[in-house]
Each structure stands twice: as C-alpha cells, then as structure tokens.
Picture 1 (cartoon, rainbow over the protein chains, first blue to last red):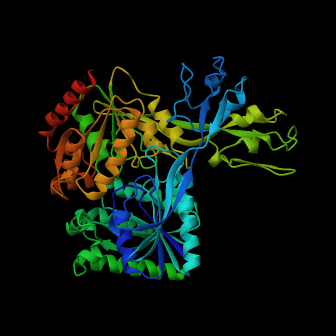
Picture 2: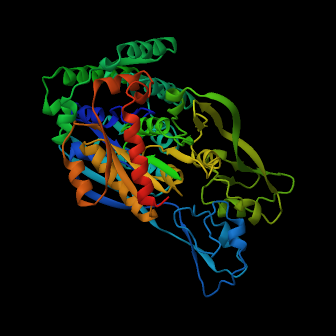
Picture 3: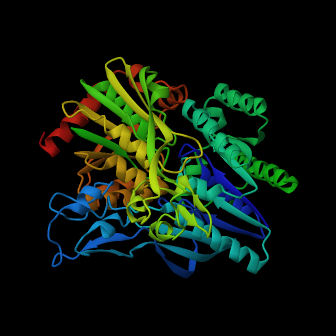
Length: 289
Length: 278
C-alpha cells in the first residue's frame, strides 16, 4: 500500500479541490481528510458516515473549590497563564499538562478528560473515506490527524486497497507533520504568487527534512506565467519533479458551488483534462517510489 | 487596540486585508502570527533591524543522579519522555515546556535547557512597524513563536495581527486578547463552511467580529445570507478583479496602486472603534 499527501504550505491553493477530483479519478483507494480543524473535502465527496469515534485530546485541569485554600501555588507554576488571579482555570489556555495537580498542597486539582472532536469512517460513491472534525478552537490536531491516518490504513488493509490519498492541512507545523510522516510522496500544490513560491520552498524543505519525495503542481498557473516559470526553475534547480500545471477557470468555483468535483461537473473542460494529466503523472512517479 | 485577521479557510485574503489595512492607517504595528508560512514581509519588504531566536525550555537528564524510576515519563502528558531500565530518552519536539518533569523527579535529576525553535524578526516598512515570527522547518510547535511575536504588542498603537489559517490552537493563540476580529473569507462553500467554525470559536471566547468578503462576485450568496441571519456585519467587499489578483501575485499591496481603497479601510477601522468603544 502506498500513501500520498497533498500539501501546500500556503492555504487556498486548491489542495481540497484537486484531492476531490483525484478521488473521483481513482479506484482501489482510500481517501483521508487530514485538515481536521477546517475540513472541506466532505463538501464535494458527500460521505455517508458509517462509524463515529470520540477523540480525546488534551485533558483539562479542574479545581475543587471546596478543597482550595487559595494559596496560588498552581497559578505561580502554570507556564501557560491558564490560572487567573482569582484562581479560575481558563479552558482555552490550559494545555492539560498537570503541573498544577502536582504542586497543589491540598490535592484540590485533577485532570479531566474531554472530548476534543470526532473521527469518522464513511462511505462515498468513490470508496471509503476517513475524516474527522476537531471541535472549534481545540488543540492537539496532530493527534487527531494520526487517528485519521490510522483509520485510513486499517481500511486500506481490510479492503485490500493499493493507495491512501491524504488531503493535508495548510502550514508546516504539527498537523502537517503528522499528515506527511512516512508517506511515499508529498504532492505540493502551489500558485504562481510571491507568497505561493515562498511557502512552496518551505514545504519542500519540510519534505526533505522527513525524507519524503516532493512533487510539485502549479495551480492557476496562468494568473502569473512569469512566476510559474520561476516555480519550474526552482524545481529544476532543486531536483524536484513537476507533475504539471493547471489553468485558472471559474468553472472550478462553479463546480464547488454545486457541490461537485470539477472532473464530474465539467469533464470535457480544459481544466478537468489537465487535472487528469497531473494525476496520471503523479501516479507514475508514485509507481517508481 | 488589537485587531486580528482570521478566517478559517486558507488563502481567503487574510494577509491582503492585514497589509492593506495597515498601510491605510496611522500609528500601526503589524504582527504576522502565521509563523509556519509568514508572508506579510513579502508584501511589505521591511528593513529588518532586529532578529531574535525563540527558545523553549526542554528537559535535560543528569544520568548520574537518575535512578530510572519513571515518574517523569508517567507524568508527561505529551509523551516526550521515555524511561527504560537504564536509559532516559527525551523527544524534544513533543515537549511543550510545562516544566512538570523537573518538579516530579524525586532525585532532582532533571534540569532544563534552552532549545531554539524559531525566530522573531522586527523591522520597519514606511510608517508600519512589522514584527513576524518564523518557525524553524521541521519543528511542530508554533505556539511559543506566536507568543514571542505577541509579547511585542504596544498598547498605545493600533495593532493588526495576521493569523494563520485553520481554527485550532495557533489561531486561538493569535486572536486571544484581541479587541476585535476581522474574518476574511470568500463567498464559496468552503469559505462559508470554515467561517462558521471560526464564528463558533469567537463566540466562545467572546471577541466581537465582522466579515470582509474577498473575491466578491465569485461563488454564491450563501455567505451573505449566513451573515445576515447571524447579524454579523459585512465590513468591506474586495471584488474579484484581475488587477488585484495580479498585484498580489507580484507581492504588491493593491492599495499602493489603487489609493481610493485607503479611505474604505479607514472606514472599517471607524466602524470597529464604534463597536468596541475605543
């Protein structure tokens, strides 16, 4: 079984739009949405949830006011400023580390588990999907990503699928690292803007750091062809393979508004055909991995 | 006054709004808290006059005093410590620097060392003071870098904070203590879906907020219907225009070429001031 993660560094370059189209184009695959704090893939793939799992993220310090003698030791030791002068725990700032529990001389504080989100295993028209939903504002999205990926691999093994396709989150921090570790290829979707180019470079550095083969696709390449050339040049200089370029087309947004992938909504359009070409190229690179 | 710019979905124009707004106002500092992929400096091209490393505390084990009792690894909720019968392994990337292992060690075998995970850069671009963080590639934890950026907020200035995408902890850290949050979004199903999650976050924390619609004209009317139903003010609409997109692709804040927008951003600030009462 092979695994590929779609990432971008910069947000809004078209990761989810393209991942959804790739899913439609491929059989024998499990798709995973690892953008757990702002997931959008389900808006195009319309999964039917078969199984829901509770996700327990960081714990939360809870104070027993009856035992508290207001000494303030907990507040003084908390490095996250999560205990106020009035000795109330701020549930947003609390990281659930447990320092307050061990320093409290009255044993008035305990750590409670809390449900931080849910993981789902779902059925779509194109195969099984693993996804999740982190509760708004929660921490620990990396752990939930790990659960989504674990579920995806389990399904792939059970159903004898050859590929796990992962829609990654933006950025290069904890949830993205959790989305790329151990995959065969990282497909970086970029755009021909100064920010796109800058973020692409950091995304490729990250993939190199974790010894993952990077492959690049420039979306909306005709918005600034000069920058697209710069991207291609950068890839050549750094030995990074390019899977192709996809033009800007308002039909992409139109398809999204209709809750459909581009390759279904307008299969004959140039943009749909270019998406197919890019995906074929990616799969042939993956084959050689 | 602190105004943060968030949105949920990535690429909806947070940085565009933050930069153009900062350039339209007086006495402004602009903080780029998207430390994983900071972009503000690409548009502002500041003169950097100070760079500071960001350190986090991480445990250092004295193997001479350690008797491998395992209390530190039992305590650590991050699983950053592993104790075997004759060895202690520290996984610094997982450590959140709470300091608990130092406290629970009965042998006093744990001290802390500083580990560099990123940098904070400070500079000036015209009248705008810029502070931005950069997480080192390969480091997972953005929060300590965001904190270091925010430590440089000056209360007498108008502070604009460009937030990272998403709706989880780095966003919370960035928007926390803001007087107002501008939600930059686009009128598409993805934009609206992620905006709703951000609105839930802001309602829970209690930060007043309004929407700036970027790429107005694409997509559909659902965003406007949602804002109206939830009484969220639409502060400004930036149309989907080839010129604006081209300028952005070249890294040029559109306000420099389209100065008529200056006044519109000033009006946004006036509306926010009236709402916040400052």
